[in-house]
Length: 343
Ligand SMILES: [Zn+2]
Ligand SMILES: [Zn+2]
Image 1 (tube, rainbow, N blue to C red):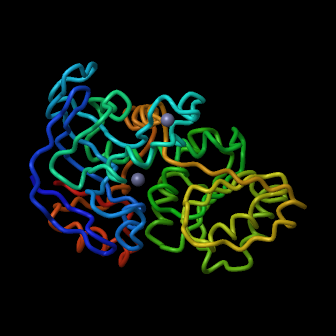
Image 2 (image 1 turned 90 degrees about the vertical axis):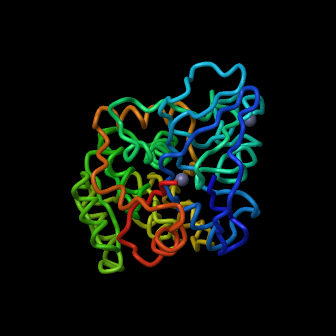
């Protein structure tokens, strides 16, 4: 089979590999689509993980082979496959926080184990890591499961409640998902911040009540948000851009006693004055990945059409073009939302 191997920072190489074989309790999935995630860009650009594996963790496909003893799946089943790779035994797994599992990163397809930038992928624990795709959900929509579930978990982890005024900073796949999910959850008003016009327009189409360009609005933005929301600011501000400037801005947009949710998880240091956060009692929540239940919930929102996907999947490209038409292009063309690879 063909696979894109992460050989080193900036080097993804197309290689020929034998099709993996499912051992007892394992499954092999034939990959239909694999989304390119911000994490894959971090791997490609910054060498974010030790090299030597096949990336790609936003996978959908069909069950190709089942090892001895696997229950609940049949060959040919349409499935979404992704993190978390939880052990089920550590402190965090037992206490309902599997995305914090001590083995999560070393067990996850596409982040350490071989992932879906390949024709086939071995799944160690199908019970935990495969989710059936409802009949009404196409592969093109289901490939967004990872993105939707990540935003969903963040919102569940945050102090969000019905009636909140919410700001979402950054309208990539996670931000656009967050806009829709807080509206679904009963937000009173949602402002989406995004520097790229095409994404601002998409945020408005997907339900943002107001869209704004933070680069154009500059220093006036905190005052505008304060005026808009009861003269105090937003109840909840979601950082979904993954850049330091955005997180710094988020702290200025939250009302006193409000909360900032760090979903973008940028890699650069952020400058904040702790005293200013303390005086205003601003909370900070963070969230990573999602649980199996959250992935199934995301799929149910996709299945009944409550989560809208129009405009979310920008392009589908062949595996051979993953560098030029995928990774490099995502950096050059900021109007792209999600690009998926069809191996
Ligand atoms: Zn992802
Ligand atoms: Zn664990």
